[in-house]
Each structure stands twice: as structure tokens, then as C-alpha cells.
Amino acid sequence: MNQITTLSGKKASILGLGSNTKMDYQCIFQAYQGGINYFFFYNLDSTHLINECAKLAQNYRQEIIIATGSEQRNIQDLDNYRINFCQQLNIKIIDVFLLEYISFQDDVLKVEKLLNQLHDWKKQGLIRYFGITTHDRDLAVKFLENSNIDILMHRYNMAHRQPEKQVFPTAIANKIPVISFTATRWGSLLKGDFNGQFKTPKAIDCYRFVLQNSAISLTLTSPKILEELNENLAIFNNMNMNKDEYDLWQKYGDLIYGEGNDSFETQWL
Image (cartoon, rainbow, N blue to C red; front, top):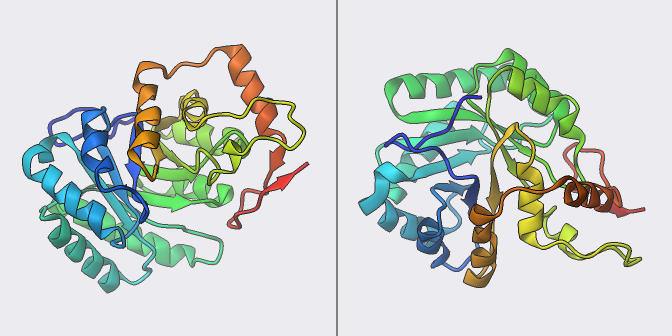
């Protein structure tokens, strides 16, 4: 599996921080202090976090991975976003740039053209890695097999385990690292089951579960407050999960099912 690294060559942390407009700005520096070196911004909405990351980059640019992406499907709009992002962060190069939320509604040929543009940016030294984010498993496999992407960002959690069947084996075969998101299933996995059959998992249990799959290079966390972040940072001291625990969370996840397409569906059996 190819690795995602910092400019100094250090491997990406197994837990990354994903932007959240409600996140305490102090989470940026606390995350870095706690072992996180991967910082992902879905867009430019989280100004308070972007400002803090810019401060962090002033002193630790070689040691952190700054990632972002865009839902734009126009090359000029993508370039404008890239330039604006760099200006906001006061950086010259973006470590990871992703075409976000590729779906069955997208024109695949147009997406390929955009990926070619990202490849050109990489050759020009404007970005270091590029790829896509998608909820669609069939599209994920298609781009893993037929595109020259460096990274796939894909949803995966206790309930949505369908990527294990084809997406992850394809990623491993092509040595493309996978970044997982929605590990807590937008918080729904933390609510417990209605029948009280299982203990309710903590967020760290959700992250540990995801990281047991060898295709996953890192998973994103998006806490709102420092207390939540500090609880999640404990994963650096306790990532492994024994078989009994893993099987337990699989059964818990089986209480929820989803089709794995683009809708954010949850249904309790």
C-alpha cells in the first residue's frame, strides 16, 4: 500500500481531523499535540479552524498534511478554489486535493478530465496527492481500477461494511490508500440500540473498528469540543481490537443497514 506522508516524510497519522463549523478552534493545536498530523477541510466554511491551521503551518508546515477538496465540476472553479485555499492557509502547496462526492449523477468522462487536471497540478508541484471522495461503491471500484488517483476517501463504519467486499480488495490490489469517513455514522452509532441488546459504543470504538481493515490508512474524526477530541486521541495508545470485540461491534452494526449509495439513510431493524 502506498503511503501518505508529510513533507518531511513522516507517515500520516491513523486519525485525521475533519473540519466542522461547530468545532472549538482549540482542537487544531490540541490535535497536533495529541498525535494528529492530517487536517482535512471540506471547504472554506470553517474560517476559525482555517485560521488556526494557518498558525500551525507557520511553525510546523513540514510536519502536517493539509488536505481539502471541492464539489466543483468546472476546472476554472476548481483552480480558483485551490488558489483561495492556499491564500487562506498561507501555504504554497496543498498536500491532498480531492474531487468531493462523486456520484452516479456525474459525467464520468468529465470527472476523468478533472482528475487529469489534478494530475497536472501534481506535476507542477501545486498539490502532492489527489483523488476522490464518494459514497458509491461501484464508482469507487471503477476509479480505483481505471484512474491514476493517489487516494480514495470512502465511507465505512460498523453499519456500512459493504466496501469490504469489493472496494477495499480493489484498493489493496492497486496499492491505493483509503481514508475513511463517517466512522460514527454521523453520530447514529453512538445512540445505542433500542432493545438494549448491546452496550453503546464510544466514538473511539468506532474508529478502532474501522482501522482494523488493512485497506484503511486513516479515519477522520470531527469532534465539537476538546473533551471529545481528547477521548478520541486515546486511539494512539489503543488501536487494536481483539476478535471477540470486533465480532461484537459487527453484530451491533448489523442492527443498522443502508444501501450504500448517496443517500444518508439509517433504519433500525
